[in-house]
Image 1 (tube, rainbow, N blue to C red):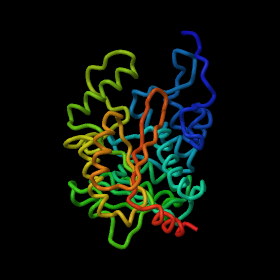
Image 2 (tube, rainbow, N blue to C red):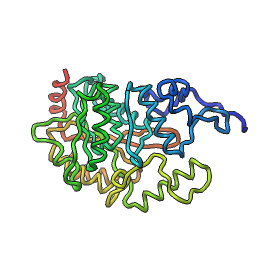
Image 3 (cartoon, rainbow, N blue to C red):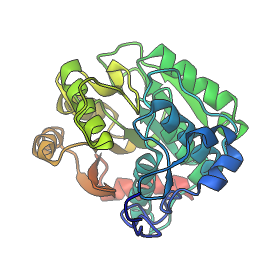
Image 4 (cartoon, rainbow, N blue to C red):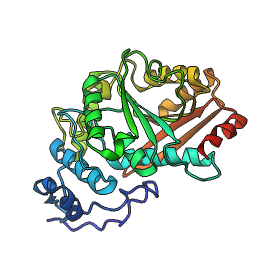
Length: 319
């Protein structure tokens, strides 16, 4: 066994409100999800861990985290669907809450007065789970994949705490993102989105191989999706930039019925083009928020079309 690593007690790069900042307590996680026990092993440093290149192990760990940290009774996803790393997804929700609080005298608005739209909710339903359990927000989850919608619906229906707060909608036209989902009489305080990062299946496969090689510390020769992912979850024509261009231009149609539009952006070099698109649609305010998880840096782009006066009028509904 190699020399035991000295680990910090807190993952300080994660948001201060993130429940996943401390190292995994596998005894506690196994207590709420006994199935996890068969996947926990000592790593070469003498620490309890799982094999993060094993898709089933990652899925069971996620189940345990969601039960332990967010009070879920049931969570599952179909084979080969995206199994998200929960700490990073939780960070997004907490930073999104900060965006709302910054407009509200530093007070995070909570409860059913806040309505959120998750663009591309996926089979895992992770953003509505965290947002509703942490802040009591209402969510609409939208997706172009019927299997994903069915899976998310099953998660919601089997967790009473979610049933009153989360609803799911199928996007009938895969070329649209917001159009056809946001109805004329609806108002959303926030949209969240984890766009498909890659521009092709080959690019997505290459990204998977890189990730796999890092996990195994040796070069991977064939892709093995430890976090899963269907084609529409991982790539789309034109990739992330094309997706966000469409989303940004569609968002203009809902300038007065949605307060903050937000999305993850995987690579910083894509930001200049995204800023250009936002300028084209006359966004009144744009924010870029950096997030760090381990060695990875990600970011949220947020924009609104509301003037300061309109923002003040909007938040009166939160009182």
